[in-house]
Amino acid sequence: MINGFDLDDFVTRTLAEDLGVGGDVTSAATIPADARFTATMNCREEIVVAGIDLAKAFFRRIDPEVTISLEIEDGAKAATGTVLMRLEGKARAMLTAERSALNTLQHLSGIATLTDRYVDAIKGTGATLLDTRKTIPGLRLLEKYAARMGGAMNHRLRLDDGLLIKDNHVAVNGSVGAAVARAKAAASGLQVQVEVDSLDQIEPALMAGAERLLLDNMAPPMLREAVRRVAGRVPLEASGGVNLETIRPIAETGVDFISVGRITQSAPAVDIGLDFSLT
Image 1 (cartoon, helix red, strand yellow):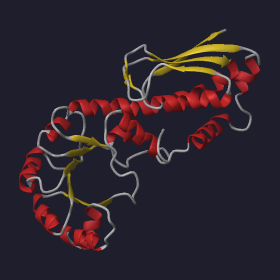
Image 2 (image 1 turned 60 degrees about the vertical axis):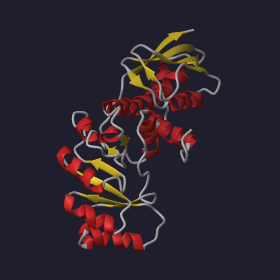
Image 3 (image 1 turned 90 degrees about the vertical axis):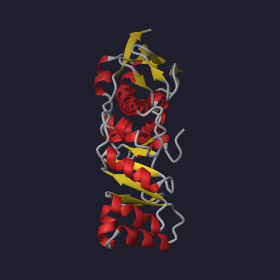
Image 4 (image 1 turned 90 degrees about the horizontal axis):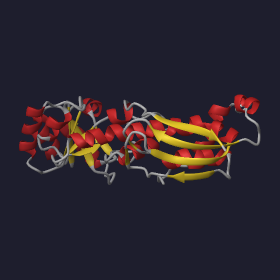
């Protein structure tokens, strides 16, 4: 489902965190071992779904014989009240897996839902929404997957899969041009992107061989001037201070990409519930 992601390991670690040494002592003490539940997982607000197969995996791990019917796929929009999943199986197992399944699905669907709002805000401008490396440690693959489900394009996954010169790299080298020249001399085979925060850094960066510019914290008038000066020579990405109120004016300046850390860093979990009944 997600390249490089170990689902079995994730399920094992997440359940171990929740179960501790003694397991679900409440369900063991109050639910008969032979009791069975049917359940429906419902969204209680309008969402974009991400992580439905992960949620399924938690129930399957605790009760391999559980019957599960997925009613929706990742990336789909679901109206309030939509049934996302139907289950039938051991009552204890469902209660044990419930929180891990919901936590995962609520968090990832929250990212996908917020991402979709940003994508909708720039529709028709020609700009593409990018995510960033502002993710919860250990969850980057999942969070970037959720951003894709919401309609964003993934930016760098790790430090080794993209060469991005930022302000501190520039400070050590003394200038944008010197930093880019040094990066080009390293012959890494990676595209050289450099962050610029003023218009007078653009030409030195391009002359030194920059293949993409990150226009950092520039207001729309400055972004429009940067687009005019670059004139299509390299792709332009805008970042910094981007939110749902500012992203449309930024996109309308003509930049190619807009990177937004908020979609992974600040997305609220969506409201999804699991309703049980005895069979």
